[in-house]
Image 1 (cartoon, rainbow, N blue to C red):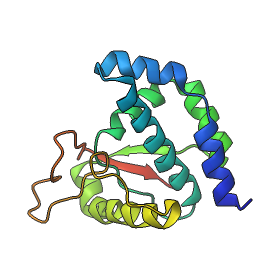
Image 2: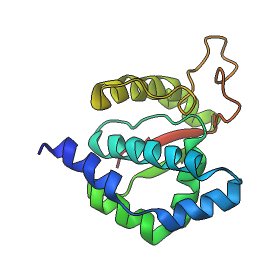
Image 3: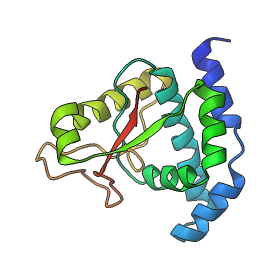
Image 4: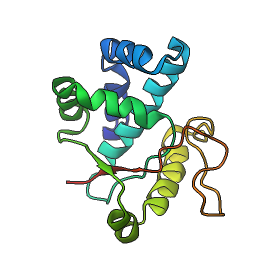
Length: 154
């Protein structure tokens, strides 16, 4: 098993039932939708763990809200990070300064490109919206979270 495969496997196996239950209650969403978000969040965070030493990935779309819920369970989140990457995976909100200096759009585009390489499939567009070229934010998804730059590297 390669290091990348092991990271993905550990991420996917990490128990998040109580966190997802809270998320379902907070967001009033069906469990099937929450399960999709859980799968995609674990994939995103596994990719952040594998991306060690690089500047991180950008985050857009509805999966970000589950990340926020997960982070509030600090012990669980710390254990997850330690398990899959041996380090804390920071959530870095986007500000005007961060956006201008760190190129969050490029980091998000890189995430989408790497996602396809890592998982052998295109990231689902209903969960990972494509950024429109008109600079108005995200195309095709009202659940966009343009305020989140994504994960950062230590």
